[in-house]
Length: 499
Ligand code: NAD
Image 1: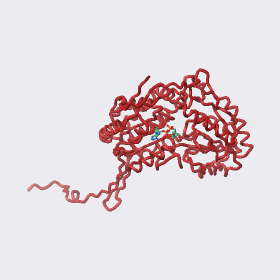
Image 2 (image 1 turned 90 degrees about the horizontal axis):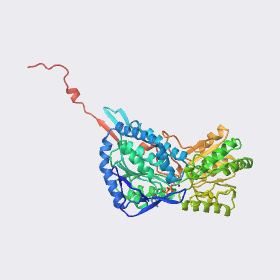
Image 3 (image 1 turned 90 degrees about the vertical axis):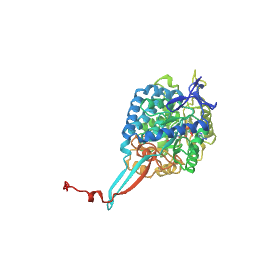
């Protein structure tokens, strides 16, 4: 059994707590590694060492720090296959999807190559008589990233890129279910020239997280995970005077207007609803057709597409559409929610509950399910299922569909399929959701924009990556400066006569 480590001060370090979490192979159900869970003392020591390393890194000029990012990006490209495989091995997603996970993280590192431009600050010449003002962006010190299982490469990269390029040191606490990619990325960062101690990967569970939240050296916490934990971490970090941005769960709706291209909408829904087994915070989990005819036409197209989906292990090659879910508990929870949908009166059009794969009977596979006639009071509508389950809520009008989304507690992503620019424009203007797709199912913004939801999908003010990330990971210091006349007036500009 492989025993994983922490990565502290540039080295792999064994855990000393004697506590471990199991890392599964979700396709077979076997435990493939154990990951150490840090104690308070281990975490505090890693934070103290990061604090020692940080001032020299902050004093390294921004362009040199950006060069580390350039080398890091090149190494990620070079190791793309290896990293994708590492993601898929612990998460279970298909290899192309694992590659996408690494790629969307890499794109943020590419933006971080231009970090000096984000860190220039502001300047006002002659804001008053002989008075100049300038605002500097300075790193915070030691910051922390706490990340979820579902994007083992992308989200750690979203955290470490802007934080490190801004001159901070970072404690990264990856998900204990998929920790290996973060450990490998830390090795690559070292190879890229990052000084030891500037990125510490410390594995752990609630004990490690609470230590981060209570440690006075930690200046900021960037969290991504489920909403209850996001809200908890946001509250405790803020109470302790830290800057915090905590991104949570989602329930993403797609409106399908009567004038939409139904085949394209159905294709998009199948990809966005079932890709990565629905374990994406930007997955579409609710289809909202407008009008009964639209709903019938959509269901008619969805059913054969969903029944054709191929579920299997990532090792089975490009033929597989999606893999297992992350744990046996996740599988039971998803199947339990599907049961609740049936009990509460929704129409289960495609039933994935009894799915089993020959040779992988102990794997955490869940077949795809499609519900029709879901109503907002049902648990399958209220809860984030985070599995391969698509619910259909039928509506009569566009206004009713919009209202449904507006009233949902989450506001991460949403989408509309329509041929009418006016409707699409109205939707984008009015909807209270952070990321909107127009004839586009998963509107994750490119890395030079920013990523963040509204309502209970995010706690804190600034988004992830893009310009917001550099604002989050730096503090503004504003200087008002006046230089009294003296040297200039007193200067002599002619050769002095020698007496
Ligand atoms: P999770 O909340 O269980 O875990 C996230 C992190 O929090 C992990 O590092 C975990 O160790 C830690 N954690 C878990 N329980 C804790 C506790 N009680 N106290 C302190 N720390 C704790 O989330 P997950 O299951 O790993 O990830 C899936 C969730 O993340 C979904 O809800 C998904 O929507 C969400 N997500 C959101 C975004 C976004 O940007 N909004 C992106 C990806 C995933």
